[in-house]
Length: 176
Image (cartoon, rainbow, N blue to C red; front, side, top):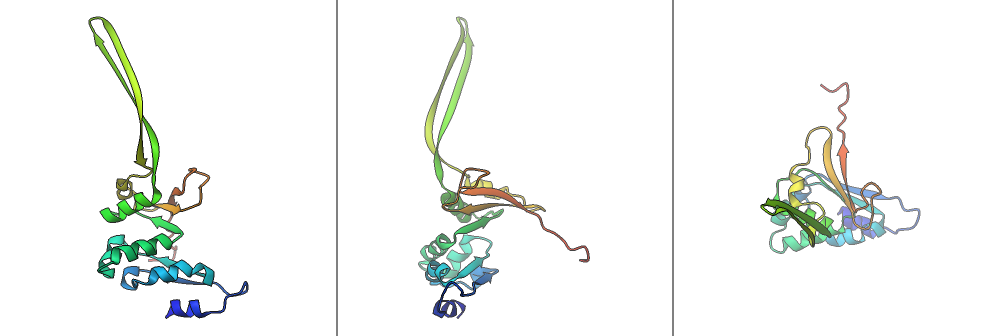
């Protein structure tokens, strides 16, 4: 209903922006959510979907759910990824951040009766910028670590489309 109401609004430069915040999003998503997300920005709407892993989306959306979930996730401009032990989520995150050509160098030195022998070389290969396993080692303690990804944005600190960040969890002094 929210999505339909947002898309039915007359949008001008003065239209008030709205947002949709969904915690445990796997309990509320529909296979058509990616269609709304593809036009939400032009309707002056922002969305935040929170879930533990992409496998929950796949399971909830059923047959064809993998494609619908991937289409939905592809429409989110900013992705914040935290510590996760779910293999499909971590593989998806590594694939999303991408791969790059990397030169690997090797060096060998040995000693024999005729003296020393040395050799070296290098080879180029395509490797993940962030390995899927890196998401299993992000800290869950305060400060919580995460990887922020924005396609098309190059972060000044890394020169890449991703940035490792820390989120400090502030506990109010009057909390018991």
